[in-house]
Length: 159
Image (tube, rainbow, N blue to C red):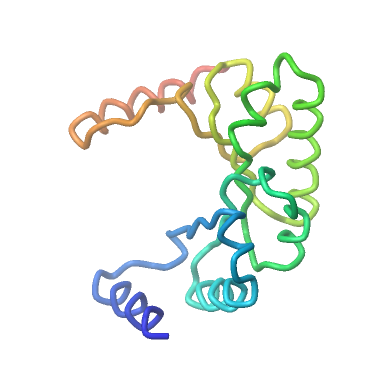
């Protein structure tokens, strides 16, 4: 496939390291043509990219993907994160996903974090990466420096 050669050429031309990039693939995409997806992901990993499964847990065969596909990270869908404070089942599901992913040496990202309580719970469960409006809404390029400074202050002060 020429796309891999194109990607490699762009990385070399721009002086970028593939290990700085993460390709995200949704579970629904993985279902469509699994054999092709496995080959594609393996080739991307050979180039040095990391692979993340986005919206983890919303499809029927999630656990099969952890075993079958060459992935480095799972991104827990926001639908699970929304209810972790008030719903015991959601809390247990998220805890189990984080625990299982860690046992498989996968990085875990929680999507849709909107409150300090959600962030605190996920930090206690050792979720490595948190994303969501609690930290920032989408910002323009001009707003980025002040947003980064604000987030750095948030990190320095304990929750």
